[in-house]
Image (cartoon, rainbow, N blue to C red; front, side):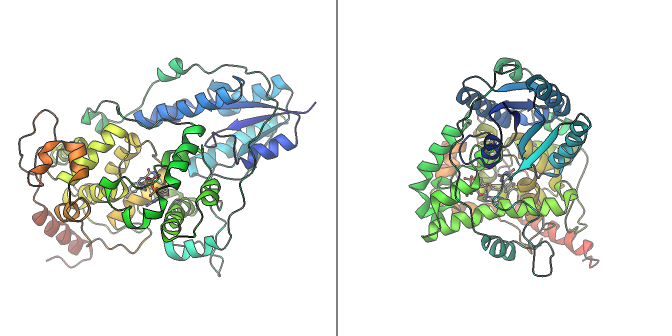
Length: 458
Ligand SMILES: Cc1cc2nc3c(=O)[nH]c(=O)nc-3n(C[C@H](O)[C@H](O)[C@H](O)COP(=O)(O)OP(=O)(O)OC[C@H]3O[C@@H](n4cnc5c(N)ncnc54)[C@H](O)[C@@H]3O)c2cc1C
């Protein structure tokens, strides 16, 4: 009887799982394992940790309690597990994030020395990063040509749910023990003093499938409504995609592109593909500018205090504050408001985009290094797109245009949103407050800094 190990990572599902299907086809029995890497888990933040534990819990249940869940170094855990079940092969879905790929190379090397082969199949993407190249065999630098070229590869159909004989768990899932594992936060994040989110989405393959089914009834309105945060008309599948409770292939297959709403939605999925591709070819861009613009940013006490006010949703600009409040409460923020809050941090407060990106990554349930850093860089004018630095979001005009009936700000800030757009965002003190900065003046200051950076000081 051939037993192989299956190492689950960001692929916490049984349906449409190519790596698992392959492992099942070449072995009689599988030993499934999820390894909690202490440092990664410590950094995962208060929204991603419970979501991940939900996903593991459901997978463990679906394997009839036969998933081994260990805390430790993957090379050590995998080596010990393979030896105890007599396996010489370990299968996993390929990991493409720069840190994950580095870790995988090291683990492979260690296992190889003990005669164990680590085999990677598939990836969490439609097109594994690195696959899509231009006619001159170069990576794409801009989204639209990438998307056009990537779409030509088409999408393979989903595979059947894997039903397999699983060997007994070597260590069972102890959620309370995992919940107690240490969290790591840096000084700036702890200065915000925020408590854990209270309205989190729950994770797991079944819930992901349900979200996809629900969204299937709304998707035809996506192209018209997706920019309006109060309409809540996007899929909310970002955390499912991040943890792999759904593969994007399943989504493309279910949604199709036969109406404008569907086509717009599937196109949007390719931003995730594109940013993973950019990170693959430029791993340093997860924390550094892809196209530096050398604009001066602020530092020091005032800058730190402004960061805290921004993170708490206390800038005095309603749509910015509502977005930051949604992030605090749900570990999620609507895309339009992510763009606005990011623009506000960079161009109204003149802070480094990395400060905001770290806060987002800490709080977001869908926190994903490639999507997050490149989303921030797009806004800061240092990323992939031609979005110029001098395109500065006006927080009041954005509120008028995208939340005209104030549904969104009312939801996150309460009745004060019936007041003019500038007011206190704190739950305790709802009286109108002075805005943290004057947008018109800071816009000019941002343009002045741009001029200096270009060598044309005014
Ligand atoms: C500053 C900033 C930070 C961001 N940080 C993250 C992050 O950490 N993780 C994350 O998944 N997305 C991030 N995004 C992208 C986007 O805001 C979210 O993917 C989206 O809001 C998730 O909601 P949804 O699933 O309802 O999206 P939908 O509109 O339903 O889109 C479907 C899926 O397509 C992908 N997608 C959509 N828009 C984008 C985009 N602009 N960039 C990359 N992928 C996209 C996501 O996987 C998303 O789940 C960020 C955007 C900005 C501007």
